[in-house]
Amino acid sequence: MKKIYPLVLVVLVLLIICPGCVKEKAPITSPTYSLSLIAQEWETDSLYYNYTSGTPILEYARGGSSNILNYDNSRATFMSDGNINVYDNLGNFESWSWSLSPTDSTALTIVTTGGTVHTRILRLDATHLTYYDSTNNALNVLVKTSSSSVSILSLITEKEWKTDSLYYNYTTPGTGTLEYARGGSSNILNYDNSRAAFWIDGNADIFENNGTYEGWSWSLNASDSTALTLVTTGGTVHATIQRLDATHLTYYDATNHALDILTSTPPSVPSLMLQKQWQTDTLYYNYTTPGTGTLEYARGGSSNLLNFDNSRAIFWDGGGEDVFDNSGTYEAWSWSLSGSTALTIVTTGGTVHTTITQLDATHLTYYDATNHALDVLVYKP
Image (cartoon, rainbow, N blue to C red):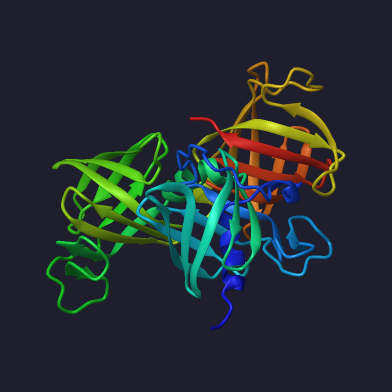
């Protein structure tokens, strides 16, 4: 049988930790796990092979310069329905599944596209997942990604979703009646022109196929962020998210026994930036590359060199920018984009040339080449 460990490596993204993992060879036998891993995005921190046979071989360490394998960009998210959304290092998507033994919550089974992997969880907390893979004699150390806590919010909101397909009388994969498929010629229902947009404040704008507008609301369960509740004009819908990435949202609607598959065009840079209030989260000067620079300000910090606690900025369509400094003084700036990352800001003190390094519904980070600074902004509702 073909070895399946290369695929398992991708899943490693699902559960890792422990710089001194050699010390973890004795598994913890009776931990209590709340499965806080659900709906969190995990990435591989380190991976060892031949773990119990002589000297373990370090195949990958995040940030390492002599890795045998590469998992820098691989990601995995465990979903509450038992699926795993996996992206390999090249960004290719695979759907896996997972389960815990009903009698031993440390016994984790992962079904990959290459076969079944039997593992034992050695550590699981809010930010770390380490497990021993007995199928491949490997130790997988995973950590939660820095964007995990906001990933679901930023993936769902600030974009337009359209129905790709819809099944009724759905219970499990392969069941149900296909009521609508985009581009289909024999649809029972018509969603060709329907649209939905979810907003950070919990509201949702819905446009029916005939253009009629409806105002809905939505929320995620505080303890299980795959549990999606929609309050429609016709009643409350309880759903479970099965797949979510930048362009896909699939959920099972338990209220109506339906499977809704939505797709979205990635949002433009202006649509993410505009008409929202941004505040400084951190600011570095003398910055050139990650790990360099002097931290001048950190929100909530006690020893800041500068104060941006009350400063705000709002980018507007047409190139205007309203800026309020820490004392509340107003200044009118302007902005422009070249491509999708070259951001030019004309301030009252001169022109600043920057490069956007991160932009989603709640984060805007850019490198200011004019002042050799890194500005990290966050959305303030």
